[in-house]
Amino acid sequence: MPVGDICTREVVVMQRDETVMEAAKLMRQHHVGDVLVVEDRSGIRVPVGIVTDRDLVVEIMAPELDHMVITVGDIMAPELFTLKDSTEIFEAIQYMRSKTVRRLPIVDEHGGLVGILTLDDVLELLAEEMLDLSKLVGYERKKEMRHRR
Image 1 (tube, rainbow, N blue to C red):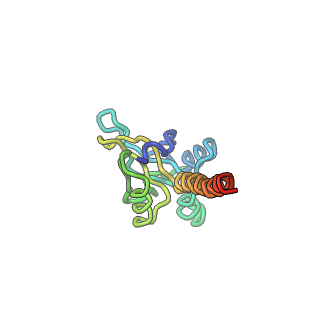
Image 2: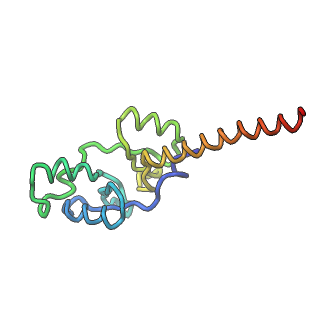
Image 3: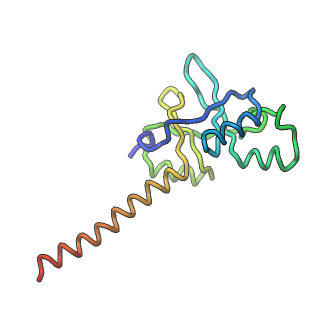
């Protein structure tokens, strides 16, 4: 299954010059733990960074910096890892593990933002698959009991 089929398509985005206070308000408003920083490149929204709720706590609140003047561009991770929407889910899991990231922006073949794949999305998919497998065991047992009485 390609990640484009399970990623979250509704992504909260910001420009790099917007403040971290605006980021915090958007996270609260949309009940999310991150915002993607994007640039417009020839009409395509290209992800260039990510800011998480943890970034806000560790980088801004703990050292008591001015959240009204620091921008998301100032604190976003210097390197952003992305995956193409055609990438298979198990390849994406391996990639997340190798890069030690919980969130991956998903892009199309032109680098345009499609959505975001989170650890939560992956865990939900795997839990559903495991549930289906466990049901299969029960169905097989019932089927055998019916046929071998």
